[in-house]
Length: 323
Length: 273
Image (tube, rainbow over all chains, first blue to last red; front, side, top):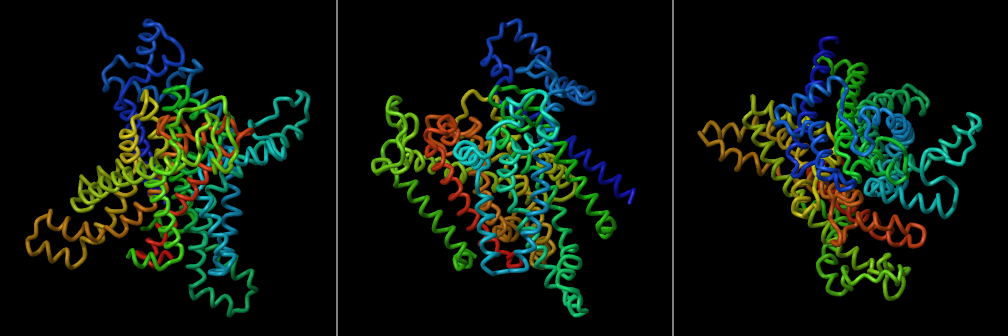
């Protein structure tokens, strides 16, 4: 196991290194100067521009830039935001908790409700409920998150006034509000973004679980379990579902990029103060260092997600390690 | 294969919807007001009614006309970008799978690294430095960032196929590499490739809409569904119809492409049904 783990870990590091190299050369290869756009939102003097160029090493040749970029990376230095004038690392760290709260909630919902619905579908294969759930999840999958977010904000937030349509906290909340009041306030703000992201992403979990469960249901040991006289609940959940969970684990790694992409739009629509809205604002403000930093963090998250998925899989299914 | 996909109700529904969309995108503009018509700011946005079935936006432009014009843009961007991705992906996959060795390892490591960054972020990084993004450049960039998964798919198929008896026989008879690749390997990868491309259309439409929503996609005044939703944000309360219809257009188009793609996949690989 430890040999396998080491090899898999090394592989993850190599993949991340390649991803970061690609990002660096992508930035270099793009036509135009990152700072030319920055000077559009705020007039910069020639001296300022030259200083910024030197600050980001844009006056150096590509190879020297790459070395400086790697050196900075090793020290956790991702440059300085043009918009905020602060280190990018600090900005990212500030925004990470809100995104983790949003992403974690969606993850929880997808991997509970989504899996449960998938199993239900498999048990009722071909019947009306199965077909309806498939249709609904396909429509969700085809829906752009930014549009669904706007529609929900308009309908639930503005028309019905049921839930707040923007932000993470009520700005009018008094300073001496109790902890419970604050938590409830954040949770109320969380509902709409989580709903939006879940609706557009739950289809994948449902489909995977449905397929995996169908495959298990057709295996002989399920017949044995029933023949032993086990209660149906035990047959389905203890014997069937436990085994149908393996393929779904792999989904976690595949699903992370979808979640990160969706959170850019959903956070932008609901003004959720996370990484996604930071990236969207960086696009609008042409804040290149922030955009670059966010992309690198996302790449690291995706690689880590893939690694964790593989490790979890290997822990649960020893055959993987031996393969 | 196409016929088989057609016999499935979902496949037929998807194909028919796509055809209707294509037809309306092609002939619709002949019957509808000019989507770029002289904007009238004072008139404000009109709710859906007789003259304007989908209403008008805040510049008093007919939304139906803009949705139809947007279909033209979205569909052509999607088809061209997916075509480009499929071509690059196939070429890389064939080379990587058939040559093997260092070439294979190098290419696949590159693909793995590229897949670690979600496509949206790759595109944001490339597109954010442009002053105004020309449409051909947008198509090129979307196409150039979409081939990674395809190349893996084709490579996998090639690895499987090259062990097949007829491929080995052809090699034993002294066939050239070019002959083996073009005559034996390529035609046999077309099935899975077509499925991936059809499903890719939906992804690209969503991606282009998202980029346009962030202001990095199709540039105004050219109508695009994503930028129409973006514009409607300002009038969310007073004129919700301005955003609802372009969004519905996205949902319907992506859904029909995915339905058709799913039916195609079931036809190619019956196990996945």
